[in-house]
Image (tube, rainbow, N blue to C red; front, side, top):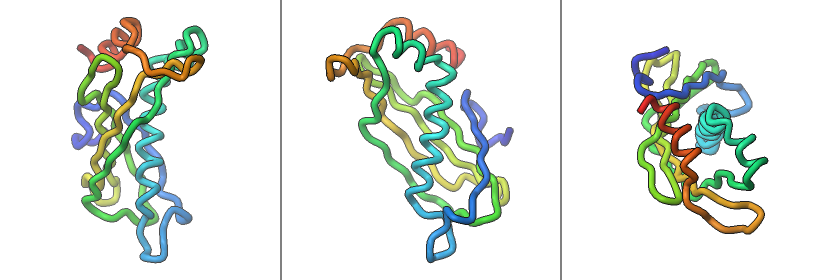
Length: 142
């Protein structure tokens, strides 16, 4: 793992695909949000949130996301995408994301996503259950 992702408990690695580039010969901006999503879903998987949702109806919903593009990505390359807890509140938490290019050995994009805790059967946001809070703390090593 690259030192640029030190402190990120979840890191996924994906190849840059030729078809992700746009007419300006760099990876299209929307793809970076897919990269964030890959890391975010791996974060949820490690929390075993999908099984928890099946039992309780409580799942995640992305309320907002943001990215700061620092350097363009091009094919061929491989990227590592990190996800870690930035903040936690009563009914939501924010994940920080970082994308590192292997070819450039540099951070190419940073951003975050706000995850609201949602009870899907009722269509309402709810407080973060203690069980999920404990799982987040364990994943983060706190």
